[in-house]
Length: 427
Image 1: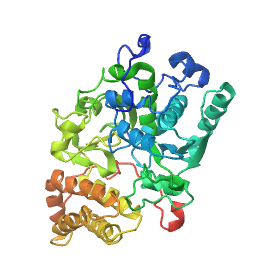
Image 2 (image 1 turned 120 degrees about the vertical axis):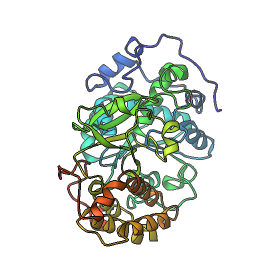
Image 3 (image 1 turned 90 degrees about the horizontal axis):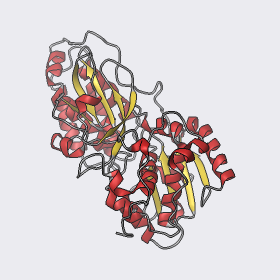
Image 4 (image 1 turned 180 degrees about the horizontal axis):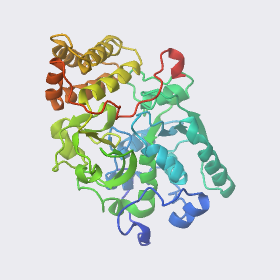
């Protein structure tokens, strides 16, 4: 622990007494509204002082990996020499809308967190990495902050290409350094040797927004929601069976059935997005890794989808697997050979009368690909595919007999309209 945990002298704000929402204001906030609601940035005026509060809060990364936030902060803070902090708003998962929503509604909360993280680790450079469409609102926010003298260091905006792997932390650093937005081999980790060889902290924008609230109201306030093992709240991108995506802030430990409630019946739940897992609907499952881990699933970046009963789970899985195969960085055998073969065979299985043994091939290739990639992309893809082989097993059997149970052929899970096909798309 780098600093002693502390609680603020004042009372918790009345807007937070009921619990949620914590992160999302009722309407998008400019600096005046932000300061009226939350007050100024609570700087500590010395490096490392905030890290103890973050550790006591139990905050984990909200970008998907759920790594303890204080550990990244402490590693970079303990390093010598110049340091860099990066707010990662790439949100390259096609089904995720939570970071986009947070950037639009509460840009100053994210920027507060970025400044506080910079102070905590002693960074002299700060970057905000996001898609071009979100830049206009952030530019306005940065101008407001500059005029009001809110920030300790300047922030450089950098845009991310629309690729699935562009938000992976080593890809972020590679892109900021002038290279393509593809993952690089580790070790060393970016916390030790990142941008320009400097120790670099890369945190998801939601993680930084939580950090800004913990700095104001303390770890005990943060732990008032969630479970003892997994405290706090998370933003979720929910796709109920009967409707379009809605971004919802939920306490960790919330029943999945409450988040995916719909008048239309669901045949399966997708938890964690396209590197996540298909699960059979179960009222006992909750939004926390402790509940999901036994089934090989995880909260991930908070993507939840309920596949309607009238759709084909095999066809949905094949569509997404094809996208994931095309989105690989092509740096290793599993991505160059394994994922394309798996995707092509799943497409065959989604059609009429697939060849005998096709499903067995997918199972065998998924086992061969697992844990052999240059990055986690092959592992995430085969996790998604393997869960489909289990949950949709009856539908696979139907397809092998030339039948399909789907009454609605319209795709359900969102994918980009065009899949990049050449190396220039990474730059």
